[in-house]
Amino acid sequence: MDHFLPKRFFNCLARSTSTVLLSLSLFLPQLSNAAVPQKHEDFPQGVSAINPGSELWREVRRRDGSGEFNEVNQGLLVNELLHEIRKGQQMPQGTSQVDQVDGGVLINAQGKRWALFRMTTLADYSAIAIAVIFVIITLFFVIRGKVPIEGGLSGNVVKRFSDYERVVHWTLAIVFLFLAISGLILLLGRPLLIPLFGKDLFALLASASKEGHNLFGPLFLVSLIMMLISFGRRNIYEKGDLTWLLKGGGLIGKGHVSGGFFNMGEKTWYWMVILIGLVISISGLVLVSPNFGQSRLIMEFTHIVHVVSGMILIVVSIGHMYLGSIGSEGALEGMKSGYVDIKWADAHHDRWGKHCHEQDLIVSAEEYARLQGQTGNISEPATEQGK
Image (tube, rainbow, N blue to C red; front, side):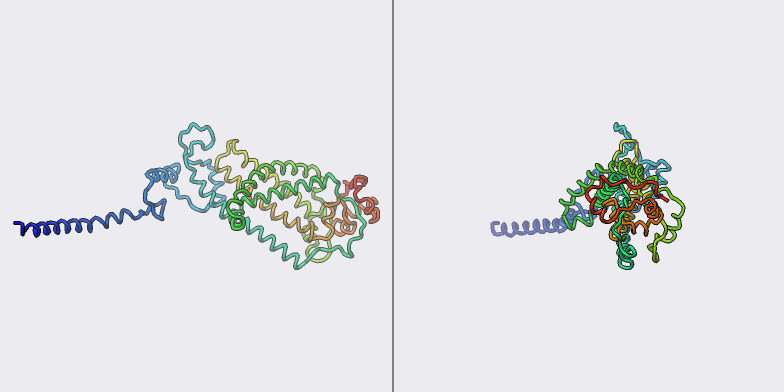
């Protein structure tokens, strides 16, 4: 018996081993498949564990007022948003102890669509508008160059703006430039500035821009009202303005067309600043004061209005700054010292220039040089010269 024990033992061991190996060959593939991260709708790259609550939140996010699936897409047309506002359409409301507009909305699925619209469509068109105006100005400067005064400046000047009027102008201009730059950082800064400064520095810059934008916004409205009071009467349209517009202010072709104290172009720019500036100010106040009953749809539409109106002023102001500085000889002096050369007045504002000659308001070059730094002793500009 002792002779057959090892043989029987090894036969039993062989059968047991075969059974184990066969079982492993059947079980291991299943174990391997289980170890591979499973595909999931929320995590297409694969996850090793699926959040059991993800299905619940997905359904909450996707359901509209009728309970039907509402796919969030990347497009958002302004007319669709207006249509929703007119209908008074709201996100599906639940029951909440929070007593405020949309307080019962658990997940705002519309927000994703709006965010994509702002980061793509709104930002892209804004960048294109700025690029186009710079291209136009560059081409105009290359083709036409600086608009000169025939025969050059005389050195004899006439007072055009008082110190107070220049303070009002520069206050509005500086506040507007700050708001424009900070707003553009918030709208376009992410793809442009992160590669230059990195995420941390851009985050600091964006945060400062947001706080500064909100802080200086009301100052823009105040300076806008000051501008309306100070310059409104002299910017009323009058006979001859339409002729100036049809001839492009003399920029097209040679010579300059007739103009009063302010010409048609300046008046149009002035009223654009006032009217569009009021739209910017009101929409800005709606955005920074969300506790007056505005729904999410109202806030989203107001954001569009604020950005579009702001971009219009930014684009046109770039042209205004060009024409008021390097684009036209002698133009900047009016807002620097308050005085302009009489030949500039005759060329661009001939009716006002004629009034200055008749009323003997011209200051000689010698007198002007002597009175530099003593502008308080110089008479105020005539205010009835819009003829």
